[in-house]
Image (cartoon, rainbow, N blue to C red):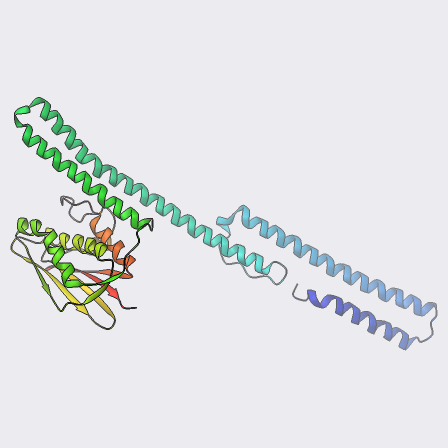
Length: 327
C-alpha cells in the first residue's frame, strides 16, 4: 500500500506511452490501430481492477484486525508489525492505548488488593481497643469497687483509638493530595529541640538519651509536617533502643543534599524488614504498641518535599536518613 500515491500517475504514464507506441508502429488510423488501442485499454483496465481489488482486500483485513483489537485486547498486547497504509498510525495508537489500559488495570487491581489489606488491618486495629473497652465496661458493672482502674484502662483504649484515627486522617490527606505545604526556611536544630520536647516523657520512660551532632543549617519546607515526620522516626528509634542507650541525630549539609540521620542502638532490621518498613500497618515487632503507620506517614511527608528516607541496618542498630536534595 505504500505505492498508493503512485497509482494514478503510473496508469496515466503507461496509457500515454502505450498509445504512443501503437501509433508509432502503426501510424495509420485504421481498424487494426483501433483494435490495438482497445486491447491495450482492456489490459490497463484489468490491471487497475486487480490493483483496486487488492487494495480493497487490504482495507477489509485491516478493518477486521483493528476491530479484533477491541474484542480481545488482553490477547493482543504483543508487538504487532507496523503496516504501511491508511491505518498505520491508528493501529499503533490502539496498541499503545491497549497497553496503557492493561497497565492501569493491573495497577487498579493492585490498589484494590492493597486497599482490602489496609481495611482488614484498620478493622483489626479498631476492633482490639473496642473489645478492650467492652470488656472493661462489663468489669465496671460487675466489680464497681475497682471502677477507677477500669475507667483508666478505658481512657487508654479511647486514646489509642484517637491516635489511630488521627494518623489515618493525616496519611489519607496526603494520599488524596489535600495537604497544602507551607514552604518556609527554618532551623533544623530548632526543629529537633521541639521534637525532643515532645518526646520528653517517652525518653524518660525508656531511659534513653537524645544527642544531636553536626552543624545547624536552614531547611526549606513545611515545619509542622516535617516535625510530624521526624517525631515518628525518632520515636521509633527510641522505642527500639535498650535502656541507657543514646539515639544520635546527625545533621549534614553539602552542595547536593541536606540530611537528618537518626541512628539507634536497637536490634537492627533484617533485609525483609528493611524492604517492608514503609509498608502501611507493617510492624517488625508485632508486640510493639504502635500502629505501623508512623514510618509510612513520615515517608509520604518527606516524599512530598522532594526527598527520600534511606534505611541502613546492622547488628549494632539501624539508621534512617532523611535526605532532601537541593534544587
